[in-house]
Length: 379
Image 1: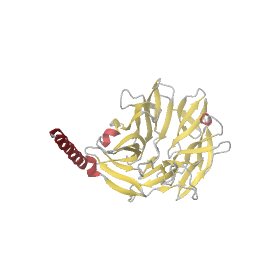
Image 2: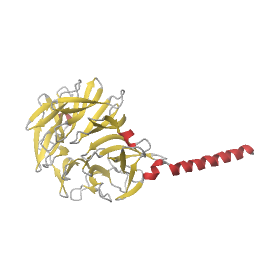
Image 3: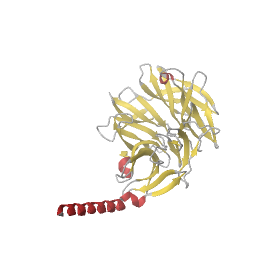
Image 4: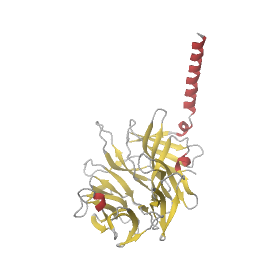
């Protein structure tokens, strides 16, 4: 009888302690819920001691509403969201949303009410956007969405960037198997596609970014099926070299002509790089045992974001980073604070304000939800 009484007392004490912990859990004090067109969006604010605050672009009923990837520019985020529907079908659609004016109101980019899947990969300083919509490149300007067709001989088009002159850059796929080995880098001016071809000795090319001067970050595939990186300008391809290995991938370019991406350092070891003035610089890694480090975006201040981890792909263990010449590579997981309810895993884009679009996990007591968030520097 005494044993049962003791168990009841201990059980009651445990429950009370648990309720107290939940009531005092640090993130509860700075979580403010906002409405986002029926979606769950939380401004988590700043975790104690953190350098960044978190605006979480959340989920509806625990399901994904924001697709991986996207871009950020001047208070606008471009992504792909899964609209709520009566079925369980996953139908991601391209969308943009301003997060500087409340309430946040995402705009789905449809063509004449045609509900076509896609994603926004680029936004310029005027708010024009580009990406993918169905089998075509997406162009959004003045409230209108246009599908940019591929040039003759190609079946699909994807855009990765748009500059201040409204020039869209991307690539096109031909029909048939292993189309990625026959892609061609493509630019669109006033909706008209131009095939800019492939570098000498290569079989495939794609534009991954364009700056206001019309310089383009190019990733190509050689005849030996290895990737190489180039800067294209006025019809000429400039080889960026490597960090010692063979394979390189150029991911983004800023208005200073700086290009970032990933390069093989030694067999199966890849580091993030910064290319400028004809030289490729190794940005390092967050840990000595990390085998794959990728830079994804660079702003005009030279700030770089990406991720560092063991292995490549969604099954890998990754941590996002921000890099600049003064502070070097820093772990964004630490900069948002380990007590934050949202833990970033990869960083996709950084804008001129230093705001960063990241993918990660929202930690809950009973489960975790995967989604995107915006990290903003705090004073």
